Image (cartoon, rainbow, N blue to C red; front, side, top):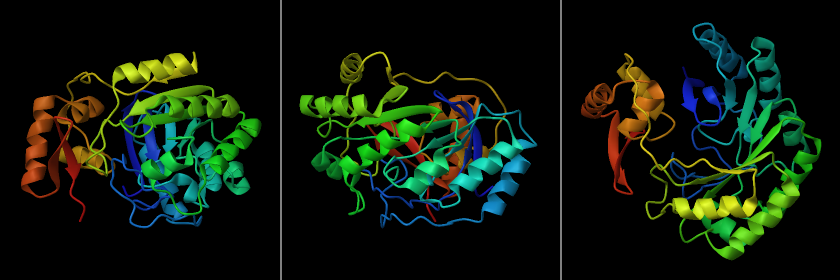
Length: 307
């Protein structure tokens, strides 16, 4: 399938079935930590990027072959709010299934009234905020020149004022970038204004676009959690994922790597498969030139070879 992926296990969303409305690396940002690489040209253009009828046809076919997922999730290869079809897509999904809908967004366009309107019928929205300081935001996210962090925060505040669903704000920390006391103070002020239901604290856990990027420590994330209060939770995984046994195929491994790199352990946990089997399939895919491995923070990650 071109536009539907999963279901995949998610710590926050359970079994999540992904819907991708955006071509690969079409985004408002070119984040240094992005797991699918740098954005060649950032954009703020909202338009219909892919044929929505085909997306919905694929979704219907997938839903007919699986148990009901815990969430239908709009995310994937780019920034979903760049799709002018997003509102219609959410409404269409809700006419096809009673599974709740979540939109994972970088949050940069919520100052636009039409974007906020498109998101209103989602059950959950997960925006990110990587810094509340313009200079740091520019260093981390390398945004489109039309984006200002104060405007982004105002958009999040305006959305919170009208959105009745769950708003879960993600903050991703990078060593040497946004891990100072002054950054934390700025985050605390922004969070107080945005009033998210939950604050998800994360760091770099997969090979990033910028190979020099490093994660922060678990201790730092716990410090941030304590500062931001009971709504804050550390979602970054510092442990090896659980393994399970299940028959799987090279196509499933290839599909997993289509949108994110992963260790053999993580792939095995996601696909509920034996790690030895996954490693064998990865070697097959590497021999055919479909995937390759890279080193990050002392771990071996597998990623898809872009054609």
